[in-house]
Image (tube, rainbow, N blue to C red):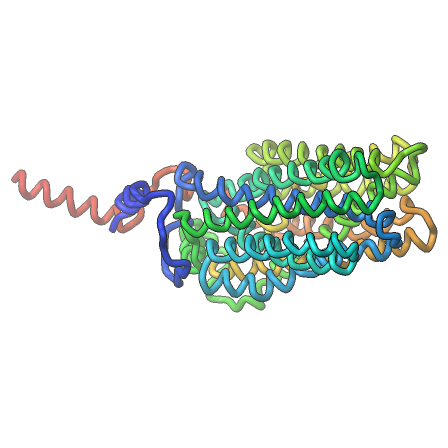
Length: 479
């Protein structure tokens, strides 16, 4: 069947129908889809980005309020981040990645949503018992679900459609995720703690919100079960490497996964970057209260919402810039600014210090999705496995915030503790420099980025052969 015939066949498929979750390892041509053909599946997946942005933003707000409501220290409150992000590598390297490679993207989305829903339901008994350990356990299950979703959603956004716009797609989707991180703190400030303050009564509101979340994600899981979305297999990615001619630079399809050193560097950069980002967001409210006079927890949550708003604006702005400038260059500039302004927040106080963190959050915006997109660029059939390792780097969010909290507790100074995320951001900056100045990194990225696959309807060699045969046959009949 020719490429044009396959495209016509895809257009005839309904949006919903009962079909098998198992895809198998075959060429589906999903990696060659045009922009229009990817609108529906990418819309569905973008909803997932909002869900985990909301969960993450809510987590940062709960972190501060649990310190007062449940009478725990800053170091112990970081257990929420430890549970949330500690679940990620188990999903991205374990069961989530296994389901992704064995069954496909749709099955992994459904698994992630079900786990998310179960974790949200468990928030109810945790609230009834006023148990911080119970909240951590429920958060761990939510993190497991989100780890599955992120293991599948990030590479799906990057590889479904024209490879030229991979970073643009994933950054736009992550911009929606950033909107979720704004809604979370706003909800915490205006719903959880507005009337009840830092009291046990506020936990009852938390229970009802998580119940609503559970119902929504279970419904969404059913929608994904019946939705017809394109699947991208390992063979599709190997084919994409050939179509973009990136295999002429480096034959990664024939190489072992363990020789994909760029992937492991990207995973380590992600570990350092995410850990630093989470540390800043987790203790932003503490920073505001300590450095800005007459700032309450509720006001701090509102300031955090403003900071996350800056983060969201940065993502939309970064996505726009990437339509004109290579993503690797945008990434290098953004992460450099992050290092500069995070370092400045260490010595500044009051509104000036908070402004430094606002600017740092703005420039943090494109870093996570761009590390994912650049990290899996040009690794062919290893894409699913490689994305699992890069997403596993999110476990930095469980490791670096406790270190930051410990420094803050020892010196009783959250501003001084910002030296910790600054140091880890520098490591991410080194990775960005390699993407721009080391040929082994840069050349393959640019080759894939310059590809016109999926941008314009290009006929394959099979189509050209069929067209030539048809012309020859017509000329014979005419003669």
